[in-house]
Image 1 (cartoon, one colour):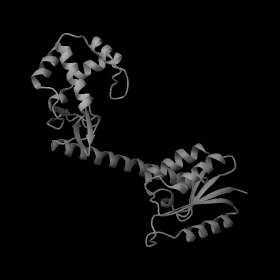
Image 2 (cartoon, helix red, strand yellow; image 1 turned 180 degrees about the vertical axis):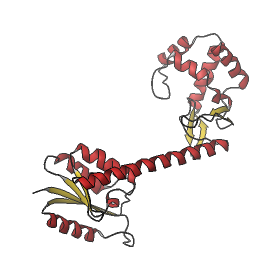
Image 3 (cartoon, helix red, strand yellow; image 1 turned 60 degrees about the horizontal axis):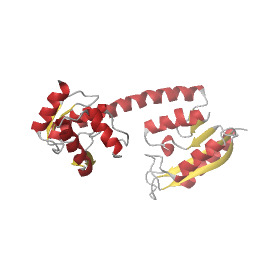
Image 4 (cartoon, helix red, strand yellow; image 1 turned 180 degrees about the horizontal axis):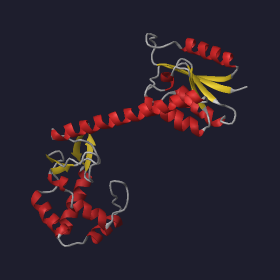
Length: 266
């Protein structure tokens, strides 16, 4: 006899848009009896959104599936959105997480069963729509970044050493900014990138990613125009090269950066 587990969820105490936990359980039990499947366990989440996996019942189910993967064959839900409301998350769940456990996914209401030929065909169609949704999200994200950059606001991305992002705005990290000023000053005084990096490492000062300094990271710092309060937003996807001013608070004077930059690129 095929062994399966069930999963039920409601997002709030209100049942206006949800089928109750009890009703979901009853219908899953009835369906399994009709298919002559053994329903081993039903996992429940009451009052949790399906937009993420931060649900105790869901986590318990995934742990149970991993520990009993040799015995179980499918996860059964009343509707797909009981497992995940987001289509991309649902595809990740079916095509990656359950596939790795060699398990199928069954949705009673949608007559969706990945153990059948029709179910696998429907999964392919779902995947196509999932890819379309992913591209739509990417386009919206790209447009949002462009709009933000054009308004001379921080449009995302990793900030250089010396800065942090707080509430969507770039702020100066005072301790790191002091190191930035020191590096610029020491280079102007004639110290090499190798010597500057060596001194910082000997003093136990780490980079933003908690690594040792190298001549390359020092040279990159010296070539970072953002320290002057000017920068170009040039997203990896957009390649816009939008010129911005004062999005990054000034740490180094423009005159000093010009002098350094000329020396670095000479």
